[in-house]
Every structure is written in structure tokens, then in C-alpha cells.
Length: 505
Picture 1 (spheres, helix red, strand yellow):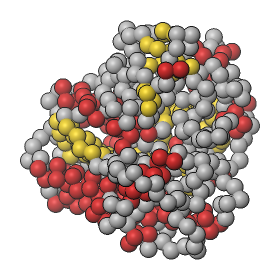
Picture 2 (cartoon, rainbow, N blue to C red; picture 1 turned 135 degrees about the vertical axis):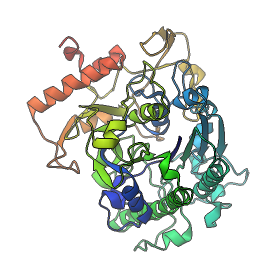
Picture 3 (cartoon, helix red, strand yellow; picture 1 turned 60 degrees about the vertical axis):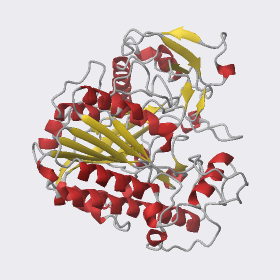
Picture 4 (cartoon, rainbow, N blue to C red; picture 1 turned 90 degrees about the horizontal axis):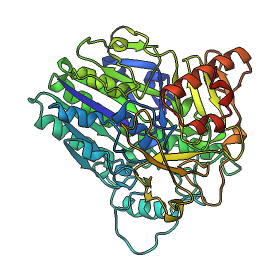
């Protein structure tokens, strides 16, 4: 038995034909939906990039205890568990965050791995000269990201030079090389369609628009403002669409080789993403600095399971990212560990068996969110200061850097734990300032200002009109607190969110 997981970053399901999009050209995603089970109620867990990938290893939520981080010493890793049980695991990726300080313990969990350089601000091309300003809207971006992106693009111009294409080239080589072998797991993932929305010219030409300004395919993480004319918004959406069509083309190559080698009889295929992306919806660009609305939290998901061979069907059951690693273990006849919170989706894939009444999701320091598939309740911090808030860790690095020494002084850091999942290990308790992981120069993000939000997706699927329903809100709060307890959430999270009164309920 074999598994191929094709993973994208920042994939907004509203731009896919199987989820109702009529203007973005994604014929291979339509073909994928005909060959697999397509999930209509799939949600994120911990956000953004690396917290989501940690869930694919551990099968449990991590956003209540820690922001962006490496794998901790106590974290279970499904690729490593598979490896220890005789299943060969291989990672192919151009997601450069794996090789930063905040992600450097992930790829070594696999039997082998390949990396392809050049996405976003990957510090790849060594050029001393300062580049010209490549974009019109860059005042909030970290300068080094644009510097590296500019020089990376000087050597990524033709179709076959793009990192995503090189990843899929490598994926096909792995499949061809190992087509006659059994018991392997291939995780083939690309940073696309994450910003910047840089695609080969032939894909950009498919989506003409009225914008005639300077190069602009990398929106800041910010609300829309006077710069964002209808032409600008349309332009960004067409640039995203062009990159989506490149993703679709490369997906087709995987479907083709599975057809050619008759892999459908013994190979599970999972096509997923870590989260979506705001492209002007809710008057915002991107993610992280605002609530996790449907465009970012409600994800596309496709699974082919050769055991039941269900194809061309939809599934309504509520599922979440932490279910995928548990499902992988089951496929290879391995029991999940006691710390895993996810559910096995085998019966859901087969006949839409319900596995969750509710799922919890969010980003460390942001809203805590819960959904039952119809209602989404988004609990805001109780105060503008968004305190108290701590990172619990034994790995003193975050995103692209180590913790600064001033954050590690004796008077600031305590020893805490152990938690139920840390296997007896204590850890550092490091204060956080209440800001999201994306830090914008000279800008303080106020998550409190959005307030607590409740939506009925049955009557308002695009979350345009928050509702007030005391009975529904009380039910969602009680289930939220129950799930936080099951996750062994730190006590201060209840204080930060104004939930302490529900602890004894």
C-alpha cells in the first residue's frame, strides 16, 4: 500500500471548479473530484503554515500552547512513526520555512527529503547590490523578503524553472523509481499558491485585466484602503488565478501517472492545503491579522481510498486537519498514539460517517474559533491588551529566528508543565506581546477590535452578517471550553478570552 499527499499552501476553495468557481481554469481539480471523495466541510486547526504542518505530524491542536515553532521533543511525528514501522517516507517541498530556525526539525522526521529553492523571500541568490523597488505597495513588508524575491525571480523565468514545477518533476521521478515497491508515503507539497502570485507568463496571459500600474502581485497583510481600486483588486485576483492554473497543471501530472501506472488500485491520494487566503473578501488581504473567516478556515480536501474505491462523491461530515495523520496511520494498520486528538476518516470516506460534532481552530494569540458545520463562533480576546499570553516550548526559535536574549532573561521566563501531552517534560514559559506571528513594522495589530462573532453559514455562507443568538452562543462557548480542557489548554487562555466563568460549568 502507498500514499501520495499533494499539499498546497494558501489554497482558497472558492477559486476551484469543484467548489463552484466558474472563471478560474482548474480542469484537473475537476477531474480530481471525479476520481476521489470531495469534502464540503473541512476546516483548519492550528494556523498558519508551520503550526498546520505540525498537526500533520502530531494529530493534535497546538495553537493554544505555542505559536510558530519547530517540532518539540515530546511531539509525535506520523512520518517518523511510519518510518519506524517499515514504511518509507519521502518529503519533496519548496516550502522554505522548513529550513528556517522555526521549522528545522520537520524534514528530518522523514526517511529522505528534497528541497527546491526560490519561493517568496527565500534567501537563495547571493547578490550584494541593492535591487530596485519591485512593487508599488511595500511599505509594511520586511525589506529582505523583497530583496531576495527580486533576485530569485532573475533566475526563475521559464516554466520549468519555477520551484513548483521542479517539485512535481521530483515527485514524478520518485514515483517512477519506486512504482514497483510497496509501503511508502510521498508528501509532495508546494508553497504555491501562497503570495507572491508569481507564475509563468503563459498562465498570466490567460487572465487579462485592466490594471496598468507597476509590478504588483504581493499584497501586504492589511485591510483594504484607498489604494485598492476595483482594478487593483481584480488584478490581484487574476494573478492568484494564474498561479492556481499552474497548480492545476501540475496536479494533472500526478493524476496522469496514477492512470498510466494503474496506481488507483493500491495507492491512497490526499490533496489538501494548510489554509486559504483573503483576496479582498471582508475588506482584507491575506491572513493572520484578522479573524479566520471561511475563505481562510474552510478548506478544500480530496481523498481517494483504494480500500473502498469511492469516487465522484461529496462528503458533508465535519473534518479537520488533525484527522489526516490518524487516517494515514490507519491505512498502514498502525494505531494512533494516546496524544492524538484527530479521528480516523476511513468510514467518513466510505459512507460519510460523522466523526466530529465540533472542531476547534485558530492562531496563537488570536480568536479561538469553534464550528459545528453550521454555526461558526469566533471568540475575541477579552481586552485590547490581549493578555495574558505565553509560548510554552523547549525549542527557543520562532519562524526565521531564535528567541532574542532579552526575551529569555531570568525575570521573564518561568519553568512550566508538564502538560498532559509533553510526556513528563517540563518547558519554558515565555511571555508574548499579544501580536500575531506576522509582525508588521510600525503597525500594532488589534485583534480585540473585531469583537466576538457568531455566524449561521446556512443562511450566510460568506459571513457577511454576524448574528446574535444567546442560546447558540452559550452552547458554542460550553463546547469550546470542553475542547480546550481536552487539549489541556493553559489556564491563562481562559483568562485571556474571558472564559474563566465557564471552567466549573
